[in-house]
Length: 285
Image 1: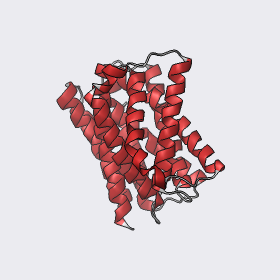
Image 2: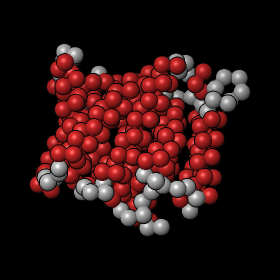
Image 3: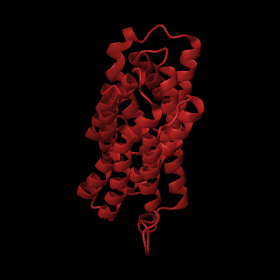
C-alpha cells in the first residue's frame, strides 16, 4: 500500500476533529448561517489565487461538482445545528457513523471489495459506535439530553458527507484537486448565499469577520480538503480504508470537548473511541 495517501487522509482526519471544536466556538459568537456563509466565503477566497489551474472542466463535470456542493450545503446545515445543541465530544463519536455509510457506498458505487482486515476494522468501529448507547443506567445520549431530532440531523449530516466522499472518488478520476476544490467551494458559497437571500436572513458582515474562529476554520478547511482531494487522486487509495482513517478526528473532539467545554463521560467516550481506533489500525495494516 502506498502510504502517502494514508498520511494525507490522516492529516484530514485530525484537522477535521480540530474544526469541530472551532465550529463550536465560532457559533458561540455568530449565528449558524453567518458562520456557514462566511466560513465558506473566506475559504473560497483563499483558493482564488489557484483559479488558473481550475479551468477546463466540462459542463457535466461542473454539474456534478455543483451537485456535490449542494449535498454538502445540506449536510453542513444539519451538522452545524446539531453541533450547536449537543456536546462536541458526543457529536464527534456520532460522526463515526459516516464510516458505515461510506463503506456501503464505496462497495456499491465504486466497486470496492473488503478484505478480512477491513471487515474486522468495520466490525470494531461499528461496535464502538453501538457501545455509545449501551452504557448501563443512562447512556451518554440520554444523560446529555440529545433529542431524536438532533440525533437524526447528526446522522443525516454523516450520510450526506459519505455521499460527498464517494463523489470525490468518482470526480477525481478525471479532475485535478485544484479544479475540484475551486469549483466546489464556489458553488458552496453560492448555495449558502442564495439560501440566505431567499430566506431573507441578514448578513452580519462586521461581527462575522471579527470572529477569529471563522478565519481559523477556513484555513484548516482549505488545507484539509486539499490533502483529501490529493489522496483521492492517488492510485491505490480506497474509500473503505480512507473512511476508517478519517475517524481519527474523533479523539480530538473527545479530548477537546473535555478541555475546552468541560463535557461529561469523557472516559467512556474514549473507551468507545479506543475500540474504533483499534479497528482503524487493523484495517490499514
